[in-house]
Length: 117
Image (cartoon, rainbow, N blue to C red; front, side, top):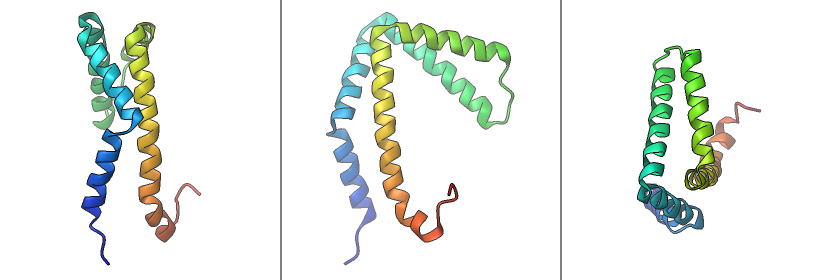
């Protein structure tokens, strides 16, 4: 019997949305967005992240000043209780996604071998 991978993927999406990790992340994200100063600070932090990632992907060098500015911004947002909690929840959700990805690619790794080994 053939399995419809897309149906399974949508089932996984539904399971993620119903997970404690996602519920915590959404609650904390909503809390940050309801606090105007936290929202501005978090948006600024995310914009800096995106700009640096785009430069990296385009092969552009990131300057020492940009790195320093990013580090100062990270230190600042980590001091904000709501943002700090949100970032911790993002890390937990990211870990779940990483683990799910490892499970998903396992058949391909078994077939082709894991290049990290």
